[in-house]
Each structure stands twice: as structure tokens, then as C-alpha cells.
Length: 135
Picture (cartoon, rainbow, N blue to C red):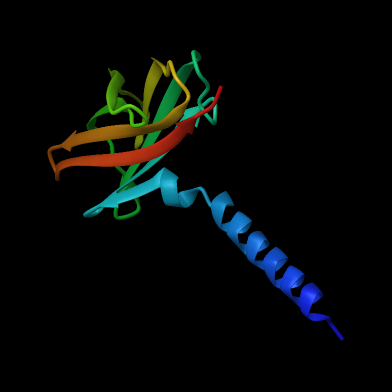
């Protein structure tokens, strides 16, 4: 039989485990959908670090197929202080895969990557990906 104190402790630990598992699911911040366009953002290094150049890979698809021939750019916003950061035009490297290289984040805190996509067969779209920069 569990005592009330132990029962409370078990309930607390179970809640903490479920909450921790939820944070491990990166899909909620790494994948965004606007209309039929789905984008995924992959930083390298992951997580981005202060003062290091970060490459951002953007994977784009529409209806499950890679979106080729798009014009894609990435603009970083430092949300901790509401300041604009570096931006770059992405280079297509494979069908549906675009890379913005060498973006440097100068401060740790909350950032956003705003990915702008232009394609003749798609409406103009912006996908916003929050991320955290560490020291």
C-alpha cells in the first residue's frame, strides 16, 4: 500500500517524466506548415552557439514531394531584445533542400529564423522557427 506522501511523490515524478518527454519532441519547433507547404529547419551546430557560424538547412515539400526551384532566404531575429540579426539567401543543394551558410548569432537567448519561400506554383510564404542560442 502506498502512503499519501509516497503517492504524491510518484504522481509528481510521473508528471515530470511526461513533461520531459514532451520537450524532447523537436517536431513542434522544427517543422512548420503553411497551406500545402511544409518546411523543416535544421541548424548546424545544433543547438546554435554564441559567436559560431551556423548553417541552416531548410527542407521544403508540398503534398509530400520535395519543392525544387524555389527562392528561399533565412532571416534571423534576436527575440530576447527584438533585434534583427543576420540573413542570407539559401543555396539549393538537392531537391527540396536549401542551405543558408555562415550566419553568426552574437548573443545567447531566444531567436527566430524567418524562412521566406517564393515559388511560381506556390503562394509566397513565411515559416517562423523559434530556437535558443546557448553559450
